[in-house]
Figure (tube, rainbow, N blue to C red):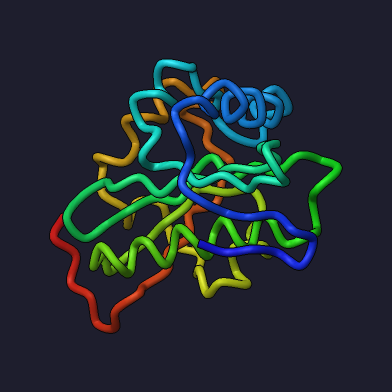
Length: 165
């Protein structure tokens, strides 16, 4: 999929890497940067995940989750603290965007606290009510619900997309 200048390779996750993905994601969830993920949830959605590897060690992860025929979400982007700002996060997000293009998904969104990071890829802030209600099902598990303080951002991969939702 991709490789950073520091030797991190971004590839699809393997089932055996689910515990490491959980540990990475939940380390950020513990600081309210993202939603926690159970091991069973990661196993069930392992095909959504990409990982950044340094040799055999998983140092980052990110997922592209299909929400509808014309909409996918990039979520659970996490890179080990010692490997941040070395291209892993960017390579993970680019892998998700490329997969969305390959799947012919015209719109990708994310919910984030790091607007500037996703802005580098062309994501634009939107009013969360512009997104379909279907995507908010996961929010019920969030301890901040209903007082969400994340930013909704959208990246249109095809011009003049009319949503199917």
